[in-house]
Length: 135
Image (tube, rainbow, N blue to C red; front, side, top):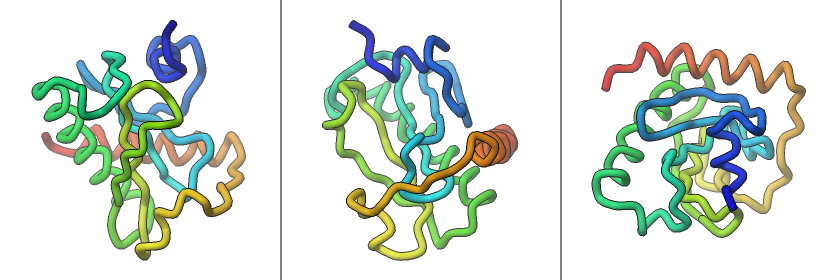
């Protein structure tokens, strides 16, 4: 059975897409801990990040770097943090989270409540910056 992320990639479930390339897909987390919180996933469904083959893992990390650079241009932050938990959805994914301090990456914090318009605006701004970010 396809994971929820595979269904998002296939367009079966709507998302606020921020970036896509041949092998990877990035979209806003719908339960963000910060504005601009993005999930970057390989299009090929693999449950555990460290089971992704070398080429796929390298591709995902380089793709995530481009997404992070785009986030930094849109969301005021000191840097974009990266977290890999991998227990919530059986599809490898990387959380890219704008940070002001070390405690901003605490997943036990209350999630932000954003309107669909706020999600859409943030996604569009990050997507625009991604398209300008060099490889």
